[in-house]
Image (tube, rainbow, N blue to C red):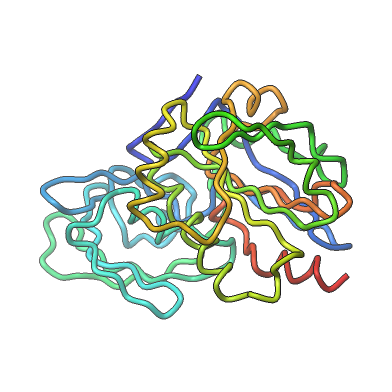
Length: 276
């Protein structure tokens, strides 16, 4: 089944969890979710904290409470005002690789002043999401998976790309937090023309209504990557569970990395593989 938890901007196909990844000879661990531990809600054109998750960075700061309004997010040196932003857009700004910092400007309930809070992203565990992992996939051949055109025909196999490094970014039109990772692939394609012929960047929608995916792609101008679709049943049957999800496949067809799309630095992982 497909479930979308709007309150925490989390997209699931069915319940799954954290992952262990290896992009080079050293083991790396990436969570499915990484952020600061706040569930978000929209109200009157603003973004508010629906709940602060116990034990998460936001909770440990002692400076963010349930019902607080998020005024802005500063990450990577870029300040973004959140007036008019959606929960999905805001969550995509807050998520990122574990150990990286961001600043939130927050107005807590019953207080007139805005507080600037520095937070360090950490793995976020939710009920039913944190125990299983994808360790069994790493350094193993990518399971057989058929990809289809955005019209639902012209099937190809992922294994057809053996000899190249392949990035599969799984997303859906109804998963607003999936958009930013796909957009990032477009930028990476433009920034690294030297990857041409060696790296295949593929955005894979799990939408059942492919017309919705086509509309999003056209509206966003995502024209720097290949676009395919996958049957949700096939996605689930090979043991995949959460979107947005990135899988990086080495030239020999084995899985080098698997991660929640916001938790992994795709550029760094690809450069490490290309350097081998």
